[in-house]
Image 1 (cartoon, one colour):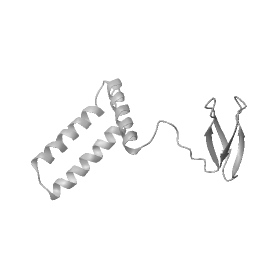
Image 2 (tube, rainbow, N blue to C red):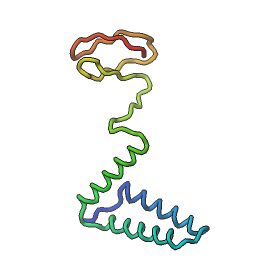
Image 3 (cartoon, rainbow, N blue to C red):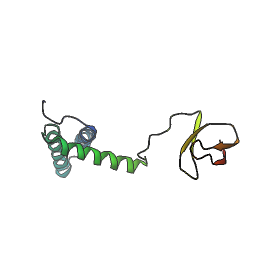
Length: 120
């Protein structure tokens, strides 16, 4: 596989779709479904053995952008910190992390020294 693109998220998704299509075709034999499964399988292997790494990478980025758009995720990192809440300063848009569960508190922005009140 030296010099080949290999397996990425889009390839894994397509292989899952191929596997699902094969399972469905066991119970519902339809030539259109079989054709779609075969085309998807061939396209998946074409992508994995391709030497045009940049183009395959761009396809994978488009897939993840579409996936995130459908699932409602943004490009920002999700906050896994359950003990803090992040606010934006109304003036300079600086992110400020404050502890949760303190009620209404006065928050002072460290960048512009603007003070505002928020509920944590």
